[in-house]
Length: 107
Length: 122
Image (tube, rainbow over all chains, first blue to last red; front, side, top):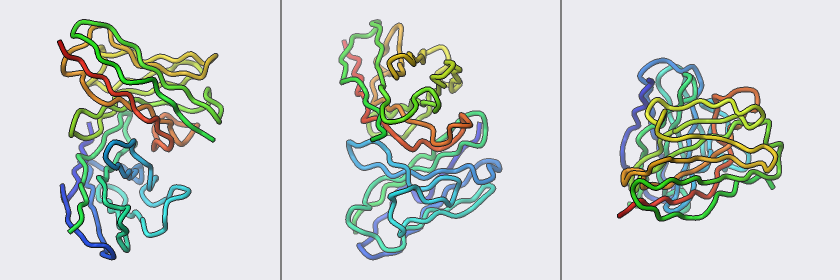
């Protein structure tokens, strides 16, 4: 099974900061990667699919890049509502898998 | 509005059976895959399996194969996740989610249910 490793596991940042989260796959997955945001007590929300496509309704400060094994989620200017946990997910193989999550906290 | 609405929280004893539901509306329920995702308390997301309500084609994660059963009733636009004998370790939030691309079982999940909390305790 393909393993996804996110880094960092947690991150402290301030409003207005530029933040990057990395997701590394244990083998190549082309561009079959999605990013989700989850707030406490809520269901995950799709942000990015196909590694770099922005889901409808998601602010343009969110962007995704990468292909193969290395991927990044970037938030260009953090807003108060962005403090949450972020997960990557691969859908290349005939099994899904998620990264372990990155908790983004207020500094 | 496209949405998935899940059944309410459950409290069960070890060994009991359970079936939780996920009702789709606002789109063609039979044309999109529905996945189930587990989130244990304070932990990350785990994919359990997916089903195509149009023909009930179902795929399971090896971690959950034989532990749960996924089904669907397309006549009422509802997918199900069931257990025949619950364990304390099944205590978790369970989410259903719709596959974004109707042409493949393997894609991002764009619509999520609100989650069903299952608590198994003696």
